[in-house]
Image (cartoon, rainbow, N blue to C red):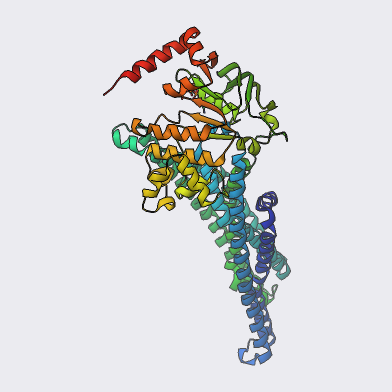
Length: 580
Ligand SMILES: Nc1ncnc2c1ncn2[C@@H]1O[C@H](COP(=O)(O)OP(=O)(O)OP(=O)(O)O)[C@@H](O)[C@H]1O
């Protein structure tokens, strides 16, 4: 528990002060809880002194009893107010900070991490786990401490009242604690399974929504749908098993509580009758016996949540501790790229890139061609250090990319992918992503150069039009040109175009070609392409096969000496001659 508290404080960072205060106030609240018993004790003591003649109570007695009650009630009321305030503010602020921290952290993580861990897992941590923490964590800790203090205060009071009754109370409390901890042990396994299942459920839902068009077209191909059903039914199974475990534990806990409380009542009456227990103490015990185990019962409920919190915190910590890509403090002052005996494998076994040595000159256009799956995209990603090479070196302007801070390195690159990603924000903000401090005029200018100003202006809300979820309200070609405008605005010295024109129809192709011409002027350009014109005009063409370089040269030299390029070119020429 102490360890959990320490880890939680660490996670809350500068918000931990508020959490500590809320726990302190919660403990104070636990103490105020015992005041009504003190008032009852005082009342009975006075009644005993007055030979149980209630009308002999003085105004002073009533005042004292009322003050003790009021202090108890008002004290708890004020404590609760501060506890809820401190907890909710600290919880929400700490959760917001943790989400931002994780978001920043993930930006520095190697892309390899996202290949090995599913997006659903990360979403579960960022949503469910952090949500659980913001809603419950400080409340759970405060309640645990509050109830532990109440139990301790009650134990001391009971021992002070009567050692024999106190001993009976402690025996009952110890048996209750044993039941709670055995319940915790069995529920731990179930809670872990439940939390794991939560990730699987998120992954399946995500997959289902992403593939919704495929489900529509193939309604009878139900394996993925069945998988989702399986995950959901597993989820309800775990929930049910957790509930059963809780009901079973509560049953025995309640049995012990009732039996011990009855024993305390019976023993108090018996001892008072025998004259070995003060009548006042016996009366207080008779009144309060069933309330004695309330804090323990609360503790039992809270402990179940402590287990969940433990697992959520473990996953948040794991996400925050994913190793990031480190870099040195060097900068490149020219932008040629050199790959020196570079090899790479995604899984550590099968090489996707094998011993590639290649020079990409600055301010020139290099086209990479080769059969599908030969490693073209992977090679360009290694240049921008999305992954680290398995062996060999990638240098920009003579500097190893691992010696450059990743944030600086990414500033050197503009990459336009075949599948453009747009945020569900205005078109203007999507373009501004390339230069966050760009003015509206700069955005418009970039859009004009990327040949998308015209279509944006014709939209009802112009640049303020929302692009929709991943640009769903725009055509493929429109998205491509917005991505171009974004890249033009970024004005990075190295441009990677990964089949950027492949989804553009022939009518719009000239606009894309014009946008590319605007983008690449004076830059180091690496282009994965299959359009004949772009390939022919490249200063250097690299032909790849099975992760290796088969040949490099200009269009004319490769046509003469490279068999793969020749057949690639013949195929393209034939395809281009097809007219409908
Ligand atoms: N994230 C990844 N994890 C594991 N393997 C991958 C990953 N990305 C690509 N691969 C594999 O690496 C190989 C090279 O892929 P890459 O995308 O680099 O080829 P490509 O030449 O660009 O293909 P295409 O022309 O079809 O886009 C392929 O066998 C592919 O399956």
